[in-house]
Figure: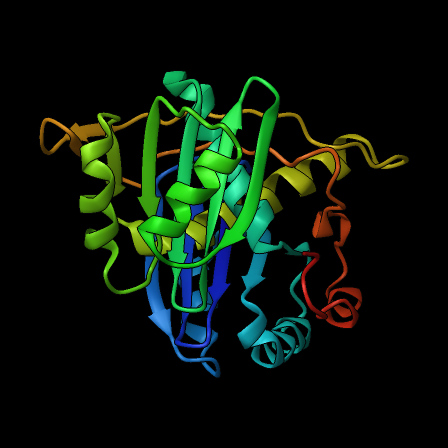
Length: 263
């Protein structure tokens, strides 16, 4: 069986998710939180299965630890290690959700070191860093003239429920997730899998991946607030104007690029 590993690093911890399938759209095989020096648990969970891709994303505050992690992956001889910016990870989640029939969506990813707001409309998907407060997210929506049909609030930061509550009065369905803390790790897995598949299909020329996706399991938890399992599949979308770090396949090269993510 083919598996994809996604890792998300913040100043607080490392979150990882191991998912089924070469597109990372399958079921969650295992998930956990580890310290920066612990990688063996994630690798051991692969067992006798084939590790198709590894996606690694990190906050600026975790840059030094991310470099050490990439060296650790190289030392273990692992291939298809793809560095993914937080913006690309959020793009992957947001585009996949929109492609599942949600139309225009806003995805708020709130992490210990900051937040991202991804917007999807007819023009595509864009992500922008924002302060971790509902007021700042409202202001960014206003500046972009965004009118989302649904809003997703995800991430591993404390106080996520307060942001959900603040958005409930907008009259727009507000959706949170049973595995909200794994959002960026799942996005990294999706982006890395798609990058490897694209490189395998077009070895002579890098082409920007198209948006695909399916969100297959939604469970209603309230009239306005829903619970969505992130173990279900979501799609990938990378904005054309952003240079993706996903073209890296050799881990040693990836270590050299463990510099700040593009703004």
